Image (cartoon, rainbow, N blue to C red):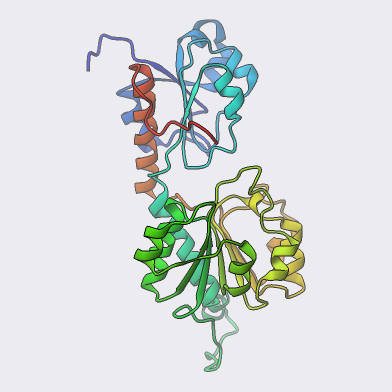
Length: 328
């Protein structure tokens, strides 16, 4: 790379911190781009705004607003970490002639692993087991304390995309019966997984011991699981959500958990994130909560960053943008 040539400028929220570029990624990025933080842009807008050609949208930051787009006349692409782009107004961004790219392949394996972790922890009552094991009041282990079964149980996957398929592969290894509900039937996946298609969501809910949500958030999937759907589920069922918090009607979920309409829930996502510290879900013994950690592995985050870099380099060089989000 020609060190004398000015590198393309990329807007980031900050370096380090909860929403900033990871320190481990900075050298890789700086070999290819000049990074401009939001603070620097605000302090020196006249000098910097016209030079920025990409936005590195990490942890949904920086916020992509109309005001921001108006001040970046040379912006070519917004590269967003993760598969979901519900935090971006794609229609508005497209109206500025700006492309959006995500990282759907980089997150698949780690998110599927997280989904199975939540299923296993919920099924075996692991959180309670841990408390028994470490409690200062424990003087013996009760021989008749039990968790739930996994092998032979029915897993209903709502959304058989990349992540749903990887979850199903893992469930197959646990000898689970696999049902799925999807916009389109997936015959090849049915054959390889031994999975059964449920054209109606209610059919899947009525049969499943564990209901796994793995759909994108869209107007069609917002509050996809609500009061009616909880009434369709078994009272012994567990809901697992690794998609987006808004896919579930949280008020209806709280009621279903409080009244015993379903047994438990294991959630990697909520709305908002984090929940208010007085939210009822935080106080329930039959709820497991994780801090949106589906992609939180060093390997997955590195892959996400590298995919984002590829998309930005494509845009800078006038090439078709890798992982461009054409429609959402």
